[in-house]
Amino acid sequence: MLKEKYGLTDDGARNVKLGTVWTAVSNLATFGGVGVFYLLMQELMAHLSEGTALPSLAPYALGLIAFIVILFITEYYAYYYQYGVIYVESGRQRIGLAERLRKLPLSFFGRRDLADLTETIMGDVKTIEHAYSHVLPELYGAYVTLAVAAVGLFAFDWRPALASLWSCPVGLALLFGARHFLAPLSRATRLGNLAVSDDIQEALECVREVRATNQEERYLDGIRSDIDAAERTTVKGELANGLCVNGAQIVLRLSLATTVLVGAALVLQGSCDFITLFCFLLVVSRIYAPFDQCLMLIAELFSAQTASARMRSFYEEPLAGGGKAFDPSGHDVVFDDVSFSYGGASGEKVLDRVSFTAKEGEVTALVGPSGSGKSTCSKLAARFWDVTSGQVRVGGVDVAGVDPEVLLGDYAVVFQDVLLFDDTVMGNIRLGRRGATDEEVLAAAAAANCDEFVGRMAGGYQTMIGENGSKLSGGERQRISIARALLKDAPIVLLDEATASLDVENETQVQKALSRLLTGKTVIVIAHRMRTVESADKVVVLVDGRVAEQGAPCELLATGGEFARMVELQRESASWAL
Image (cartoon, rainbow, N blue to C red; front, side, top):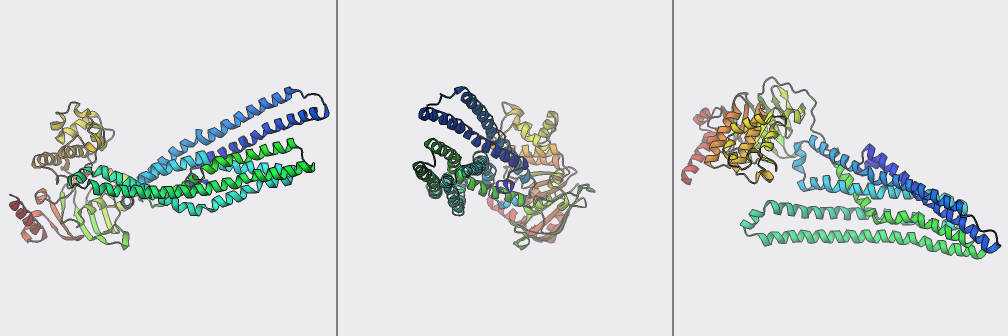
């Protein structure tokens, strides 16, 4: 139940159980102090009323010392299992989520919002962490304490026991009955906060565009609106939670009043003495003290169950299957009657029965208008996505049966939008092969023409380049990406518009670096510029997700088909630009 409701591991569930046990033992140990006090007061009252000798304080002093020692030990273990080991569980949960995400297909990330994923990994785990460290052991420990104390109280006298315990089941029933009302408010609060997070992230990413188009006020109005909506939802949720929690606490406290009334009646009847009633009230107050603390945090328990459901949704996602051995005969990439839709079989087709072969040692260029399916083909080739029907084979092996991480060991990918980390130049290049020596990294950098711009940096290859290479130009970032691919030295290279956004000088430098990278490899190039594919061995023209034509560039130009039309359009566009 703990694993299902709160996303705990086996060790985490075990520690919560131990925390519950030690919390209950600690709560029950406090009754020992009441017992010592009761016995001492009984002898003192006997001395005052009957003239007996004063009691010896030594046994009570020893009892008090024993009580303190026992309480210290039980509190120590209760604290240890509530807080000491529970944070390790939080780490296990985050690592488990990261491992799960690592094994999910990229189609999963295409369907999910980045801010939502980040909130689940960081925010939801934190919510659950607080619930099973501050709430669960205390709450379950309070249940155990209540059950044990109830047996003792009813054995002593059922009348004051009933008067003191009736409110607990009533108050908890009211509170837990209201969680079906509180759960939608908790979800609405999270969605409101997520919308604000999305706005802030978008504002930081698009600040230049917003300022350049003079849209600051309009954009800020939208953010303010979302913040106000999130605030209203949060206030509504907190108000509802406060009403439920405080209502339950009021019901619980009514038991003290009924206990006093029943106890006073018993004292007047002579069925109970004042000291017994006083100690009875002390025991009752100790029973409800843990509940007071738990109820203040009960909303977190409900939120934790919602957060756990979101975490479980990750584990319910199908993994990117693959256990087949990857031992290809060469590295020809074959598309065999491939169809693909981002929405699965029921979605609109992006590729429709596409067939072509990218041969080893040759450059195969994919061209076509925007939205024709070029980038989708490259993603399917590397199994970033799985085909809807048909097969993609590498060296005769269907990639659908190969673990994506194993498959990508044979791929080097250079995208138009380069992703760099806030690290040194050398650290970013070494991502291509983590075990590479400094000499190998520097050799790859030199082959990618990185020496030219790195030589101008004060720190050379140890220079920090900023978040996503913010201190570098587009061409410099692209050359680092190519150096990374050179260092990996994979037999298959995917180039997705690698030079599309570069100026002439940078494009020349990058083309020189690419010429070294592509030698002897299976190369799939995606390009809009026809001059980029002039030296390709084969051109595959895609139109509306279908192969319109394919062949050598000179052959396609001679036939006067779609490729020839695209070349002519670009020539006309270039002449108009001049």
